[in-house]
Amino acid sequence: MRMQGIIRGMVVGLLTLGILGIQTTVAQVINGVLLSTGVDASGDLISFGTLDDDWRVVTAPVGASTGDARVISPLVTWFNPEPSARWISTPSQMTGQESSPAGDYTYERQFVIAKASGTKFEISGSYGSDNTTLKVLLNGNLLAMNGGGFTVPWPSSFFSDNQDFFVDGPNTLQVIVNNAPGEGLNPTGFVMRGSVVAVVEGVGGSVAGISPTKVICENVSQRRHTVVEVVLAPGARSWDCEAAGLVVSPGDTIKQTVTGTAD
Image (cartoon, rainbow, N blue to C red):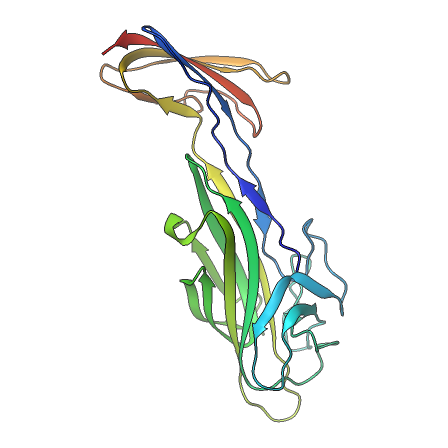
């Protein structure tokens, strides 16, 4: 299985203390993880009949296969999720026009994040299934339940920014789909479009041991050099350079010079 998508959100500081000030260099890296089924890491659609090795079927009823999920063409009664995703099913399904045993199927997607101070994570997505989705879980934490369906496009969705749901390192997203008993052709499948993103809080800072009066925020990256001055109210010990007008892009190096008096 290919385990793709490392999210990093780092604040790396070189801190120099003096009676009159603090100087900090801040570096930020922001990436995202695409969770959609039936697409590669770039978001390009995977060919029908090919395995999607980001998603696995880890549990299935007796008589159904487990392993890397198969990208399948939808039945005429299923909604078309393209271009953002494609339907997947068990690895033994080759066309999507084959019956599957009734029961519960667990689809699983793993991704890796590096948690860091000042970085928050959000997970969101929309999904459909044949027949129903019983639960959507992140590291065992419930994101959604009793959803799915296949006739109306993207019938269900989920979102969470609960930081307790995320862990540093490998994370596991699981979707439990139920295939109801049926006569004649009775296939099952699952489709999702979704992502995990790192949301880095505004570039700024705070201090202890000094009563700051002014902060000079400077973007010293070669491609952009901008400077803003933040005047702090008496008693304030934190500031936000971006809110003050500093233009920042991921990867920029930010110099913050704080002027004040030692406590």
